[in-house]
Length: 86
Image (cartoon, rainbow, N blue to C red; front, side, top):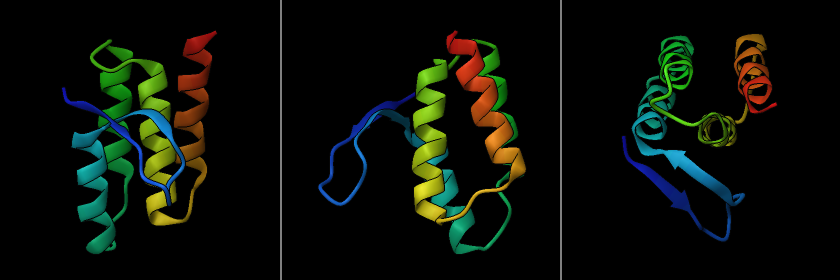
């Protein structure tokens, strides 16, 4: 999976953001669809080791900044990723 650093002046610097999920989120944001399926798939990839938990956190944080909102499921996914780092 492609993990790329985001280094733009107007964005928070994240260590790495998974581009597959970030691009998916941009498409979903334009279509005003929910992000539930995206978050479920991201969580699956982190759980199975395809993506590091920190990269999952950075990706979700970038998506939150992109869409400008959050919900309980998003926060739940973030908490799970943070717990995996401990």
